[in-house]
Length: 219
Image (cartoon, rainbow, N blue to C red; front, side):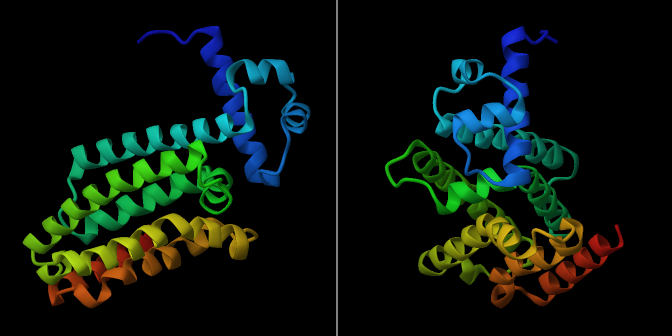
């Protein structure tokens, strides 16, 4: 494995400290304030991240790299053929989101329409939409959901609801539950996300989902 350069180590140190700062006290800091809070000179920060938005985008990319690793490793070990495999998979993604909770949250609610963050998120939405479509087709094939979900108009409504829930739960956590242990509310958020599928579940799918949540609660 190639050793990290001094510059790469510094870059990662800045991102980690900034992410910790944002999670602890919010994202409303200037570069000068960020520099003082994390103990790294402003010129050193701007050498890697000229604007505050660059910090946000790169933290989002760090999250996405970790998420891609999680998706790849999980699928290579188990595949995702049913809810007993899908729900722990979603739980793992939520835990990653929690690690980047402030930067994800503020990017969802306070980005400029013409900004780099919004452009980045729109491209991710289109990619996620295709992946979720593939997942739902597999669930229908395995008899867990009814195929009517895949009809174009129904799927467009579903994907909008699903994307809003899987993205915006972290906003609601920061607004309503930030003083509560994430582990205590995670299952409630997971169930809220999967309510988008409730009217399309087959009997087999409903039983499998109930078993998956029962196992998750025991872990």
